[in-house]
Amino acid sequence: MVSTLPVSIIADELARLRAANPLVHLLTNEVVQEITANVLLAIGAAPAMIVAEEEASIFASISGALLVNVGTLYPARLTVMQQAVAAANKAGVPWTLDPVAVGVLDYRTQACREFLASTPAAIRGNASEILALAGFAGAGRGVDTTAGSDSAVAAAEQLAQSTGAIVAVTGETDFITDGKTTWATPWGNPIMTRVVGTGCALSALVAAFTAQAPNRLNAVAAACAVAGMCGQRAAASSHGPGSFKVDYLDALYQINPDNLREQAA
Image (cartoon, rainbow, N blue to C red; front, side, top):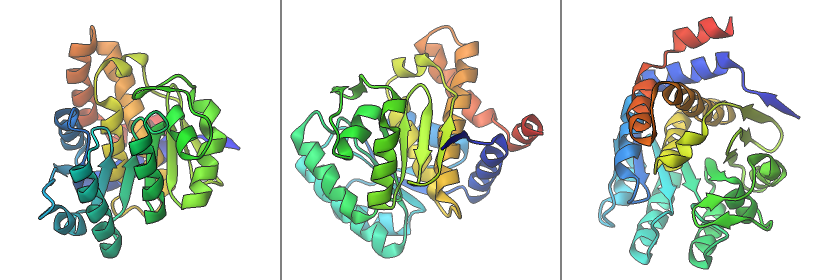
């Protein structure tokens, strides 16, 4: 059964994140580093991008959370990611996998399937990526999906059950599941797909919200909800992709747990 995430949970998770100000280690897509860092700063987390093989595993072990995004994957970066994941697991640091374009290209698909054995705390992808990662036939075109998020709910639930991760399949409506309970976050706006990096930055938000989270399902769902709500607000005030990006960062900075609680009352 799928239920809409209560706004009260979003408020509580946002307040928890801002109180913690988690340090998030981002091994992310080189195309999206700037927007990813700014999104985390705006919401109240602390981003860092340590990519040297000599440093990444050490830094992963002292971070609050780790993101592994395979958008611009190559052998040296994969080695660093593998070492960082191993160090994070040893230190009990939750890590999030963003399987960009899995199912389209064999190299990254194999790498991400191997990562599944390393107990990610969360997996965030579009419908095509989640379908492919779960072993179903995907429908991707590069980093984009040609499948609706609702078509991948069963695959997300299966993937969550087999890996122990919280799986978020994002699209017009986001679905977030632990394999038993599934939340829907029906917020957002299509213009978000016209600004590079909003999806990758969402994965960074997911990682940030998992830091010290007592309930990872609620944490990941709240990350998706906050991104969607702020996307809606920015879409209403902006005039196109350029002004949307600025307004989106402002909305992330301005979203307030107390106002959300008033909305929920």
